[in-house]
Length: 123
Image (cartoon, rainbow, N blue to C red; front, side, top):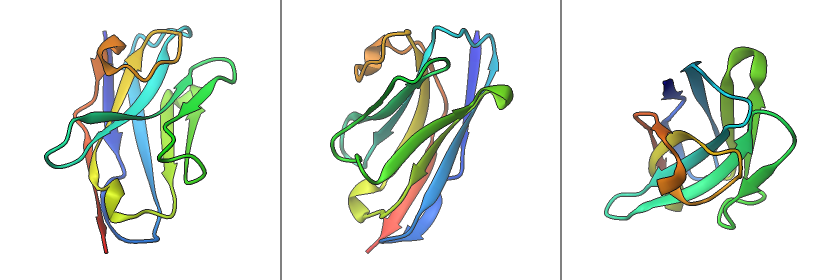
């Protein structure tokens, strides 16, 4: 079992920045991939970024490339999502997820999910 807890969300003005954290506890296999997803009001869940616990493989959604950065701290079992140049389009509940070793944007392939953290960007 893996438990994931997101934090760092909040209210920010357009153009601002936030850093989200995902703290993992329980068994975190080195072969797992860690992903960030988001769900905006009235919309379905979308892929944001993914990273593996080991190696250098990283993936981003086109909508966040150049603005968001995913990173990890293996010693702390924590994955981060640095979000810069935020716009109202980024308003969503952001979820952390743990899935297979092969990086994927398919949410259904991720087994473990956090409860989410709200990010609201004011125009």
